[in-house]
Length: 209
Image 1 (tube, rainbow, N blue to C red):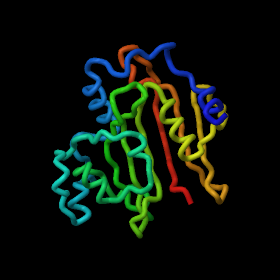
Image 2: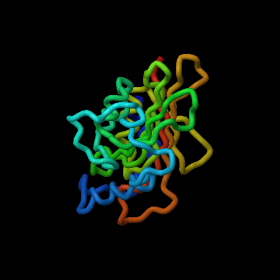
Image 3: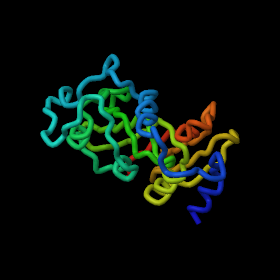
Image 4: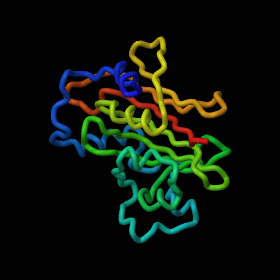
């Protein structure tokens, strides 16, 4: 029932989406993450390991600025630690907007299928180094896989909004006031040659209480 409720409102451009990957997909995702997360560190961006006073673990050979490829299930979970982040992203923007928490902003690509995501992923830790919030801003060609994951794992349900081009999903916290939210809306310009950029995604995921 949840699956039908959520998927019923989400329209995907085109009756068929073709094969899961196409020639040049890795290059596309590299440029897509560049829109959300610059290749060169901006002001305030620094090595996550340096900022944490740690060295990057030997088992992490990634060069600074290299994008980690993780599945959605790996990326959107709350047993993540700062050490786990350092193993995968030697370079991150840290100490972000919320002064109550330490944020680690990193580039994310989940694969080369049209249902995959590319963009900026941020993990927020409290003073006890417990992960409290995950946010993601990026693009996808087909948001159904993300919506299914949020519905099955975090009990997201659709909320009707006035904007006909926007699809909104929420999961209320036990206090009934705060909510995890997912917004999916069609990109301002849809290019037939850009099948991975049909939808823009904004996700705020709060740690289950």
